[in-house]
Image (tube, rainbow, N blue to C red):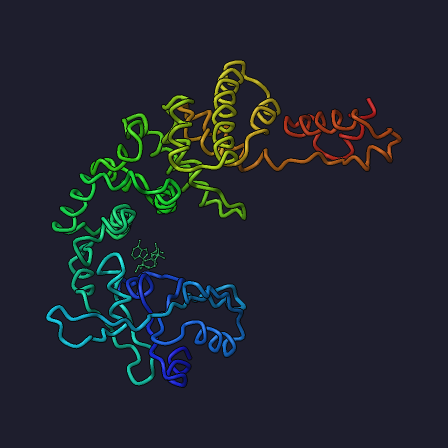
Length: 404
Ligand code: ATP
């Protein structure tokens, strides 16, 4: 219906970017990006009305997002007609605006479009050899200033290369090296660098991307202390395993993967240097404090559980050691502990102990004639411990336990 809508308005509409790339690769992609030769916002409004969807408009960029009832989103951008002075001072030439739009993109494989208007429905628009590069499994920029124009594309090149098992083309690789020699990373804002890094952390296997970044000398361009020593590689490998394990539990809870990877990257770096690195990433005070507090919570949990294990402590003591840690902290702890047995205990805490509640509540205590007060908290805590240790597991046993 996007194609019909465009035709009725006298526009051309194309599906572009990652969506087209992924169709050709046979991968699923739920993000649809449309480019309209015409007024993108007007088009988005009309299409949204047909689809019974909402629109969010960004007048400044002439873009809009159509938000469907089922939560799916369609990004709509405007390809403006642009006029270029011909080098030989011939008359101005009007370049097809979709071509200009695609030319501004990062790599040939991301610069493919599919025409959606009814008379051209499904026609692939490939000005820059994207199809050939998909077939040859190559990441290639569209022009030689691409990385100087936008250095984040270096990280994107690595991310796509590793995700698809492609390789960065020889010429593109040269351009990366040249750009890095120009020190272009220094001018890049911390938030933009971190945003790209965060996208890497969201990949299924971030470590190969990080290794590639290190080989290009990218990590040290960000900060000289960011190094993938074998210790750091180990901890990141373990982190990746733990994240996969957690995701296979299919819990509702979502984790912030970047927190785990940041903890891993900073694991062997002291407080002062870690602070400087987070500053380089423009972390807010709140974010920085959160990372620091997790680091110290994890360190103290590490020593407490080792002692607990040595003393053959009760399960309830393990519960109270781990209870203050947020989920990301628990998962990183799991990645850090080296003894397999201890790791099992932390995983048991995450999958079982964490959710245990005593069988009787504060209301029950009141009914039993106890007066509410600070004592309640202590009793409920002890009941929880009794339940975890299997001392008093059902309501009756717990009531008796309280009466004593
Ligand atoms: P992913 O599967 O990671 O979402 P994607 O290709 O959809 O991949 P986005 O970051 O959503 O990536 O970008 C959408 C499109 O916008 C890309 O396909 C590319 O054409 C273009 N694009 C994104 N970032 C840049 C950039 N830094 N420079 C040039 N073009 C870009």
